[in-house]
Length: 118
Image (cartoon, rainbow, N blue to C red; front, side, top):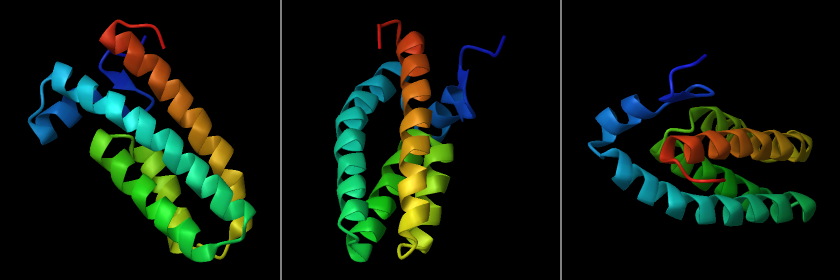
């Protein structure tokens, strides 16, 4: 069984050390992140559907940043790949479900760390 502070490559204690936040502060920021992430993923999906390269690059860049800040490096790395090749709509389209699935797993486990239902 994995330690309760490690989630799919996510190390909460490391993030807390790097940011200087305590667990409750992090969880408050995470709540804000959840709203942002949902909106950003919708923006990315719409940009891909509309073949808008500049918007794909911008959305991927923003997703990379917010995920990096919250410690979700797996999602940040996928977003970086999209950002580096925004003309590759196939890559972006195929990455969206993977990013959403990673987020769903992380969310469940973050809620477990917080002691609240997902």
